[in-house]
Length: 251
Image 1 (cartoon, rainbow, N blue to C red):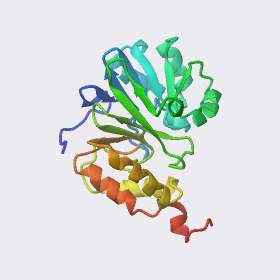
Image 2 (image 1 turned 180 degrees about the horizontal axis):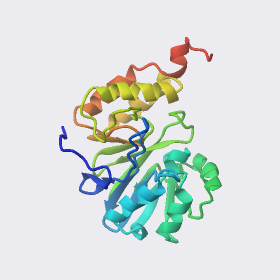
Image 3 (image 1 turned 90 degrees about the vertical axis):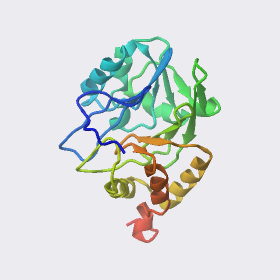
Image 4 (image 1 turned 90 degrees about the horizontal axis):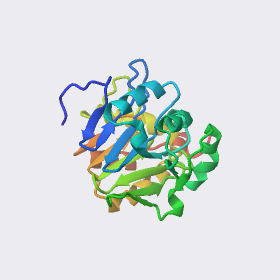
């Protein structure tokens, strides 16, 4: 369990090669978590965030690396809090060879943000991205959790799952790392708000069984490590969501 007080005004190292570069809004109950993976010659930025958060996120990125070093931007889904700033992020990076990593079904939506970079569509590339170092990122399509076009990313090197909205949370007392059972209450609030049913959650959780997951890094809520990982999986496996809460029919 991490007990050291964290400085949310600056980037925070999750591991030696993974950084949180998000925005902590003390007035909000929904916090967005962009992340960096720094791997030798290549750098990946996950879900860069919204236009209002652009200056904070990119200042933290600049504290860690030169933005021109970013070679890939992973877009888990289309929401404006996830990738609303992608066009200005793309301009700041300024690389002709920058790739936007997403599911092909998402491309038709992300194009409306005014991007110019080519897309690396994971479903057309075997669901994987192998970096120059040999590090492998594996992607799972997560339809209706909550976006029909969403993906999550498993980093085989660090055994980390970048889980997009899944495993996220809503909390008035947010912390970057889950350290108490209140994280599960926060998780319930979020999933019951955005997930259509428990059935789609169970189908997704079954797909995770083949991975050795040591930490989960959601796009919202708190990072889950250690015993929180299996507990969170079991919590969601049994959590009624969406139409489960309305007797199986929409109101």
